Picture (cartoon, rainbow, N blue to C red):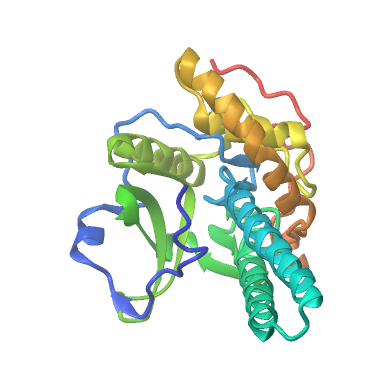
Length: 308
């Protein structure tokens, strides 16, 4: 689970680092790797490709953790406060019991409020934060956490493979100031990985890059499963499958992953059901109008052709 950008914002108003410069990804340079879409595509056509955000794959883990903490803190401390209050009622002059009851009750209330604020980082927000890449206008549209939209020319984004806490890496897009050095805003692409998966990041970048630079045909053939969240919430079954995909592997890991996914699905469902489905502004929808008869229109409701 990687929450950089959600719990802790990206550092801005800073220069591009040497490490970012060394891992700069150029839009017009083809990498000699096989592209991989990494279960990130919502829909694709000749005009645009829409991707999920990097938090989507693990959405629900944070909610499950916080809700569990709320039950333990609010429920446990709340029951203890009530028990002490009942004991104090039997001994009205025992002010120490009353003070203990009040203090523990305040901890339960204040702690629950603080945890609810943390819960809103994932629940009571948006179901996902899509990224839309328009290859006709060569613009990138990023749905921000606050519901506003960043729109920036594809060719002006400084893309790089960037290091994250806990030893993870991701592809970041930096919007630079007029000086070409100062980072004014940062957004991540959909996939992140530990150090051992760095080659996969290059494959994912090449999938995105080739769509924008070379067209939709190759990308449309590669995507085998589209994320079923285009203009709607995902079903609880789809939520289970998406989380299980992060936990699979050999037979033993698949079984363990299925059990863990079942534990996390209720939290994911709560996060999804309490959140709004993101809607692009009308001007972006107009700029992303699909041409009639486009042969590359694909999403979760269509049948994806087999790769040649």
